[in-house]
Amino acid sequence: MNQTPPNSPTTWDDAPLRALMDHIVETHHALCRRELPRLDALLKAAVERHGRRHPELRHIHALFSKVSRDLHMHLLKEEETLFPYVAQLEESVRRNLPVSWPRFGSLESPVRLLVEDHDQTDEELKLIRRLTNNFTPPAGFAEEDADCAVLFDALKAFDRDMQEHIRAENDLLFPRAVALEEAACAGEKASSDLIR
Ligand SMILES: [Fe+2]
Ligand SMILES: [Fe+2]
Image (cartoon, rainbow, N blue to C red; front, side, top):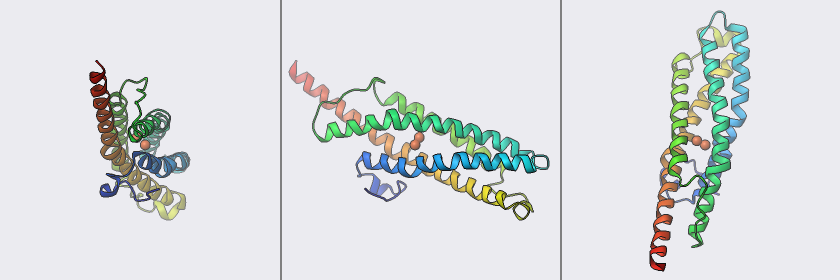
């Protein structure tokens, strides 16, 4: 499988969508599942220890918990509905077989909803970036609590990975999948016109 990260569009522009989706699941989705509960627990502990002196931590924790809940649902929507359909679509086109249209009609509506989820998560992460002063621990904070230093670094790494994850889907996967579906749809219409 192609291991080049999806922020290298020259490579992923031509790779099979199946490979791109496998890459997204194995890297970005795996990181979400690993880091969301860990960071949530670290934030909860930070609130318990420092929430009185640093009330902004409560706000950050509340926001992060929401991001975490929303992302768990979002990943399931992608992995259980959209990605399998795109993989099947790509395989049908590759093998010149009739496309089995999904119960959600076409990709347009689920893709729009997933992009809205991305926008929402992006806004919430922007707010966390602002509240943490771009993931800079308050003065003296890291020295007095090693877990808090780990927390700010890990939040920054998570934020960076989410930006890459969203770009890989919004800018690469979704437009290519929609274009493939449109091409397959046009092909089917042409064949049904010939039958009539
Ligand atoms: Fe995703
Ligand atoms: Fe997504």
